[in-house]
Amino acid sequence: MNDVSFRVEPGEIVGFLGPNGAGKTTTLRMLTGFLAPTSGEVHIDGIDAVKSSIAARARLGYMPEGVPLYREMRVFEYLRHRAALKGVDAITDAVDRSLELAGVTDARRRIIGQLSKGYRQRVGLAEALLADPPILILDEPTSGLDPNQVRQFRELVRGFARKKTVLLSTHILSEVEAVCDRVIIIREGEKVADLVPGDSETSLEDVFAELTASPPAGDAS
Image 1 (cartoon, rainbow, N blue to C red):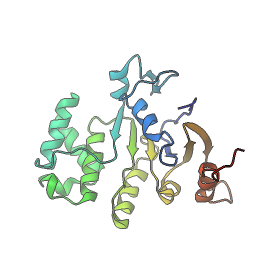
Image 2: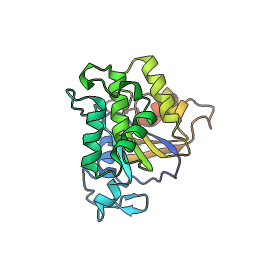
Image 3: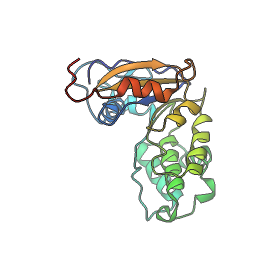
């Protein structure tokens, strides 16, 4: 990473884009406390995420790509288990609230391994919401979903507008255009754009291609 600096305002939904190998996952790991930066600073809701890692992590919910779930457990059992590990107060109320927010209440007693990919993704979102964090970091949340499931998940995320701060990492540009207030694009560890979708006559797809395309082989410019 090379001096990637950005701020996400409270209640904002921001898309975080970049080609494979750009540094998105590294950035998210630093934001969520899984990887310490070698230089610079990370602040989560005003808290220094390096000096006060536990306090910073308590302010955010993280949904990684490929949510790790206990497939043999029932949905509500898994969420109760995760809530206990997080030290959440009033666990039953927290589980009920997160199930409703993630749109998965109807599956609360189903075994996770028997759920569709779309529902498993929703369970992952419910887990991220257990502590009612003000900040959500979602890493490729619709990966592997069919078009209808993508649309449903998109509606869930859109519902967080002005209620939670969301950083959404995805390769689906149409999803970003439909959901996000702002877009940050990085390439080779550097921020190359910070823009508002729809502010330009140029499509986000064209902007992304122009800013992230690799130069032809042998081009030394």
